[in-house]
Length: 158
Image (cartoon, rainbow, N blue to C red):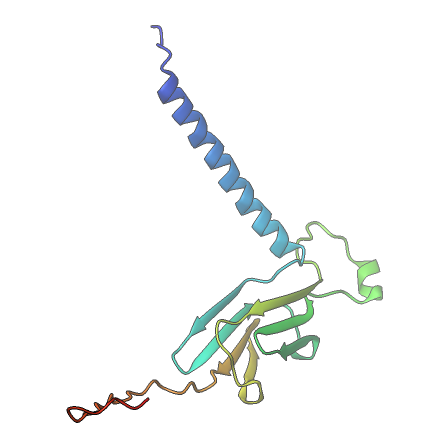
């Protein structure tokens, strides 16, 4: 049986394959960057009163994490993973080694201004949770518009 060439269909199929290859490649690139210490996984969300940042940092110790809040960003730095001491490292035979130590440094832009002095940082189960109260914004208030009556025959005053 002979397949007829249908350029439009074949080009669509080619572009679909290119899209799939690019998407697969980006997924591998993200996994590579997380594995080799370029950037930890994180979430940023708004609860109404606070901004909350959750950062996945497995194997980190609270003393190895530095948090700095600036006007419009949170800066995180630290180490994660583990390392064997030299004596133990000489005695072991590795059959598989995928968990390596690493360093991270990340600046997270904030969508609103926060109160840095009231921020809390909690590290539990490999997840750093920053709770940052938002700066209280003055609520809009209604301004009544008044009318001015102008007597007949007089000029309006500015």
